[in-house]
Length: 355
Image (tube, one colour):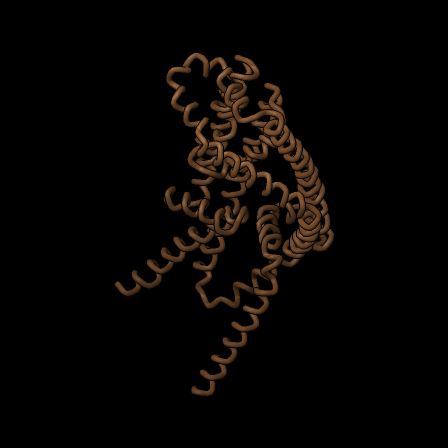
């Protein structure tokens, strides 16, 4: 008995040490690996359907990987380059504006807006504050920090581009093997866990439903909101419509305002600078189409897949986003939904057994 205990102790110690070392080596590639796992889970039904036709694991995985590269990676890369170009142009325009206009000229131009002129008496204290030296110094420091940030990013563009190309390769390679060998690997993983089959399936099912809910409820609705925003921004004639639509996509994940944090200021800007119908059109489009996705479609989809209180889901999503980056949109909800499932298993298997 003692010899068996020592044997098990050293076995688990070696497993822990080598598993920890393997995890450390995989950490630099963790982001593309996690994205490959997510995409593999989402697209696995399509892979199974293709496999039923082709009758080959390797060929089916290869064609699915090629499809993901063609349909997702290539368009995403093209849009990223176009957004970067618009960002550079907008930054250069901002720099030129501040170089060609003094601080007083900018304030006078703001005062010339029709809305500002109409309510000048009420807004006068604000303009007095804007003309103070403290505010001028704050604006100058803020602008210098923004320009330095963009300058640093532009300087790193070659390194970032090279790293992203390598990440795409890691993603596609991992995605291919997840489709081809993922089922067998999962079955082996299930055999190694000393847990009741029903409980294990409950945990894996929770993870699967959570990933689908986040993909369709968060990523899907944010993408549709960005697409609707791009259409509206283009119709009213706002410059850098693609850049603003990408900002709409990312803003959609940040409560409480979501995508309205982008389209509403643009609607106000359009009303005073582009025309009456442009402002009214963009405001109505944003209220009845873009924000409808936030208020109705997203909660409906997520509620069906994630069965935890909304306040917990809120902190899980935002906390995951802040801690792990964009992939945290999946990791945060997965951690909390799995934790709730483990609580249910504990209540069913341990507490009820003791009573």
